Structures are given as structure tokens and as C-alpha cells.
Amino acid sequence: MAKIKVGVVGLGMMGFTHLDAYHEMEDVEVVALADGNPKRLTGEDRPGGNIKGQAMGGFDFSKVKKYATAAELIADPEVQVVDICVPTPGHLQWCEAAFAAKKHVLVEKPLARTAADARKIAELAKAAGVLAMPAHCMRFWPGWTWLKAAVSSAKYGKVLAASFKRTASHPGAPFYKDGTACGGAALDLHIHDTDFVLHLFGMPASVSSVGYSNISGEPDHLFTQYHFPGGPVVTAEGGWSMAVGYPFTMQYTVNFERATVVFDISAENPLRLYETGKEPLAIELPKGMGYAAEIAYFMQCVKTGKQPETVTLDNGADAIRIIEAEVASVKAGGKTVAV
Image (tube, rainbow, N blue to C red; front, side, top):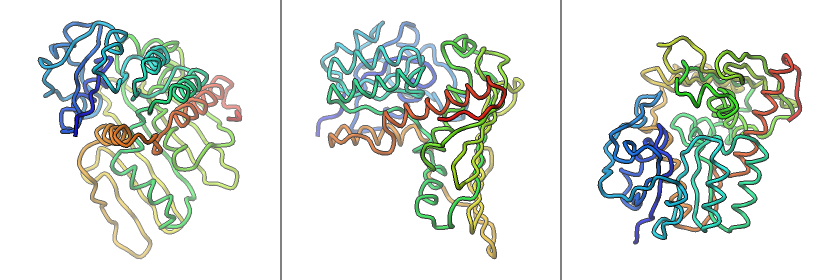
């Protein structure tokens, strides 16, 4: 079977992390790269990640075509799939260009800078008749896929309460200091948990959030309660304003009727299950992170010609819609805002 030919646009931390995943896939070939920094096109300049295992390197840059602009890569007839890893404000422009060229598209999260732009991306993809997916990696992350299965199956009863936490020191790059571009930690970091709340429980009726802006001009640290009539009680904390040297934190605690489950990325055994009358159990998880799994899933969609279902463009737009309500609530001093 012929390999799927991919072009990666944008070689920041996520672009390099995607290259790591493609490097391990036998049925996919990266044939082109695009970035305005010549040293990134050769791999000489490689940004680091905030989680061990991101942007590790190993990809052979000598065997691919190199373009200074996304437009040139999209015009390359050999490229079947465009993987868009540019900063958020460029997502709409390059999705639109790729769709016009009838290319399939994997686009990094958040899908767009605004929910309105995200909806436009979804409409353009549908009109073009191509396959497209936002890269919401938590829907594929070991331990988080376990939680989704446990909630969907009701194996431990219904969920009574769920809390999520994702905090870090600031990434430091100028883009992340400009809230008009990145949306602050609310849109760029916290959206991972907002999207997973959406994945587990659907669209909340409203949200109430408190937080502060001390770096970007948009919420850099916030605490949100997602309101679901009749339950469960769901909260999330997210932010990147911790002191330099603070370790990346990714956690959840979910209380079911008959069990409690805890995930902590820093623990030797990240996922632990507590059931009444039983010894605490460390759940064995698959190795790796969610990036390779999400990319493999989308490549399978391309092979079969089937639109993604685990995460869709509409999901990506809905997650931004919730974030916009959270930001509005923060700016209104914690007032409840309908989604």
C-alpha cells in the first residue's frame, strides 16, 4: 500500500513533536516541511517541550522538501495531508488554503483564535469534502482514554464529581506573552481540560470562572466550575503563571458512585483506582503520550476516507465556545455565563 504523504507547516515545539510521531510510522511519509526559520528546516534549531518526551528529535531532515512558506507547501502536488502547527492566529488562513487545494488537514489545538473562526473552518472543510481534525491530544492520552471508557460504561456508577488541574510556569516565548494572539493560558493550555470535560459530559449549560491576567493580558490562571443541571460537579484549574522552575502538573480526580480514580502525571504509577472494600490499584497504562495515537487515528481516517469521530472540528469549535464563556466570566468577576 502506498504511503500517505504529509507536509508539516510550522516547526515549533508541536511541529517537532509531530515529526517524532511520523518518524515511527511505517505507512506515512513526511515529504515536505514549511517554516520561516531556515535552521528549523534543517533541525539545527529545535525547541524543547514542557513534558518529557516532546520534541525529542530523530527525524531525518535531509530527505524532505523544504519551503519557507505554508503556501508553497500546500501547493506541492505530492502533499496529501497538511499538518498545521503554526501559531493559533494562522490556523484559519492555512486551513482555508489547504481545503481550497483539496488537502486533508490535521490542525493543532486550539482550532482557531475564536469560536467564530473555528466554525468557519468546520464549514469550509465540509464544503471542500476533505477530512480534517483538530489535534486535541488528551482524547488519546493513556489514562484519559481509560477515564472516558469508565465514564461511558458506567462501570463504577455515575460520576458525582470531577476535578482537573493543569499548571506550569510560563513558556517564555513572545507569542505566549501576547494574549491577543495566544488567548492566554485559558485558550492555549486550559483548553485541554475544557475539551476533555466536553468529551466526558457534553456541553455545560453555563460556567463560572475566577482568575487573573499577569503576563499576557488574557487569563493566565483560572478556576472554573462547569454547570451541568442534575450533576456532576465539575471543576478545573489551569494556568501558566507559576514561578520559574515549577514542574508541569497534569492531574484529575474523579469520584464515581462506587470508586474514586486519580491521575497524576508526575507519579511513578500515574493512574490509581480506589474501590470500597478493595486494595488501591495502580492501573497499567500503555507507554507514550497522546500525540502519536491522535496522528495514527487521523491517518487511519485518511486511509478509510471516514471523517474523524473521536474528535471533530465541531468539537474544537465547541471547546473554544466554552473557553470564551470562561474568559467572559473571569472578566465579569466570576459571574455565571451561559455557554
